[in-house]
Every structure is written in C-alpha cells, then in structure tokens.
Length: 450
Image 1 (tube, rainbow, N blue to C red):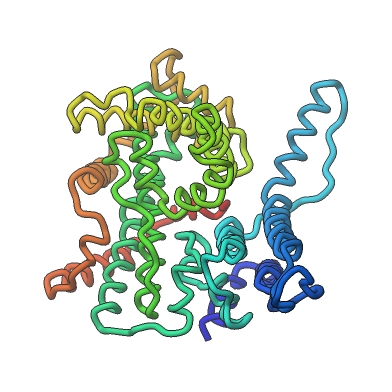
Image 2 (tube, rainbow, N blue to C red):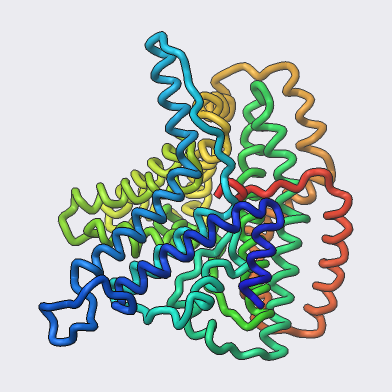
C-alpha cells in the first residue's frame, strides 16, 4: 500500500517520471542480486560454495549499479548543462550553437538515485543484508515522505522497519508536531523571506545594505524551506512508523565551516563522506591527498545541487575552507575568538557562498557581491526595494527568523516530548499556516531542481 501510494504521489505531477524511478529501482535491485549471489551468471569455481558469487560478478554488479545510476542522473540533470557549455565554446570561435534535445528534470532524482546506489554499495561492502523482495526495495526507494526533498535515507536505516514497525500514540503525536513545525517553517518563514531575496537578487544594482539584507533573507529562506521539508518528511515517517535520521541541527550556530557541514544537510554530507571521500582515500593517503579529496568531494557536492557553474564555485569555496581547517587541525582562522564572534564570522562566510548558490549566473553573482561591498553605484530603481524589504510584515518575519536561528530550540527538541500546551499551540500554528498558504501567491519549491 505504501509503495502504491508513493508511486501515485510521485507521478501526480508527471506520470512519465514513475517509469524512470521504476527502472532505477529494478536496475539496482538486480545488481544487488548479482552482488549477493541470489542471481548467478555462472558457478564460482574458485570457491568451496559454488552458489557464492564470483569476485568478478560482485564487481560487475557494483559497476553496473553505479554507472547505470549515475548515467541516468547525469543524462537528465547535466546533458543540457554540457550542451550549453559546448555551444558557448563554439560561439566563442565563431560557430553556431546546436540543440539536440530538450530534457525535463525529474523531481527528486538526485535523492532517490543516491538512495538506490547506496544500497548496492552497502551490499558489496557487506554492511546490509539484501532486500527480501523487489516490493520491499521499491518501497524503500519510493517512500513518499522523503522522496522528493530528502533526507537521503540509507537502506540500513529502514531495512528492519520495512519488515516490522512499532506504532504508538506518542510516536504519531511527535510526528504530527514535527510535520506542523516543518509546514509552518515553509509557509510562515521561508516564503516571506524568499520574497525579499527574490526582489534584491532581481534588482539591477541594489544599495549595499539592501544587498546584505537580501542575502541574509535568502539564508533564512533556504534554511527554513529545506529544514521545513525535512521536518515534514520525518514527521510523516513517524506517523506511519518509520524513524528517519535528523537532517539539520541549527547550522547557523556553527563556529567553523567543518562544524557547519556537521549540521547542514547531514544526510548528504555523511553520504558524500562514506561513499566518496573515504573511497577516494579520505585522510589515509597523506596530507596533500586529503586536501584534494576534500576539494573534489565538495566540488561534486556543489554539482549535485545543480547543473550550473555557480554551484561548482559554491562547492569549491566550501572545499577550500574545509581543507584549510583540516590543515589547521579542524580549526578555523578565527578559532581563538569568543564563540559569539566565531559564529558571526562563520555566518558571514556562509553568506558570501550563498550568493553563488542563489545567483542565476556567475556574472550576476559577481555583480551582487560588488553591490554588497559598495563597490558599484546603486541603480535609482533599486530605491523602490525598500517598500518590499522594510515593510512591517517582512521585518517582523526577519526578526522571528533571527531569534529562532540563533536562540530558539530546533524542531527535534520541541517535538521530543508532547504536552497539552504544545498540542494547543501547534493546532493554532497549523490553522494560521493553512490560511497563509491559501492566501500566498508566492510559494516556490526550492529543491525542485534536485
């Protein structure tokens, strides 16, 4: 029933995407059978047990899974990116551009591809046992609460839960609380801050202080949008008996970039660590190789977020900073300063990187940074931004975001224990959020491209 519901949910926007997810599921399931020997291509003559898969078959299953999964992701997500860059090179030398095909990006393909691929890699490593049936594995890949926006759930986290789960009133109630908190984050905080961010990033040349307010609003938008979706996913999971891992832990309270990545999109950072950084050698092959591994992991992590050079630069900056902190023993340049000042400086650095993440192009990112530091003169039309940025409503939401980010409890702490007072507050919050959702004209899905 869960699998059917998940496929209906996923196919609601575009039914054709369902077939792509089915193919990815079937590919990785069959590769898992090859790795574990449930489906043998031939007898293993070098083993006492002829039913065991040969080393060649195990490697073949792993390679087919990784190449097939990344091939699907690469085609749908990066084909147009490569095509546009080739066109730019051709046009630079006087040639004419070309267009082979237009591709629609399937929603959530990055998330379920990483999930399905981690299953076969863990099977190869002997970390997990194979799924009992194709239906169990299909349920894992398509599970609707976290399908389109994460967190990236590994098979080892839910293998036992797919077979049997505990259902309690307390777990269900905590799930409802988490869902309402996430829903309110998205509607009441992320969307209003997104209006301000879109206005400032869309301006020709904003005043320097408007540019800073705009990027801070974007920092609030992306945090409350993504953590809100994660809270809703974890909450929905609890309602149907699944316990998913935490994906955010107050990241803007980090006092270094290393600490930031322990708190931000935890499921992605740990996935990149376990399936990319460690296989590349981690920190076991010398200092230079460690720095190279950190840089390449964050470059690919940036590219995972989107097929743009701005995402690559965003990842490169984080990679360089992580390598620098590793060189200093995981200490930042400002580690001797008082904690509040360390957090402030680190947030300032994160804001600079968010400019590249948000800007539509590299030239627009550089132009926005120039505005932030007052190097260029503001455009006269940008004076009108004040009516959007500094309205009472947006200033109130801005203040609420700042208080929650740096002084409030995070969602998991709030939902840890259910009390009558919390229930009453959450009911009121949910009703207000519902009314706000139906009256808002601005309601973007930031992680659609992922």
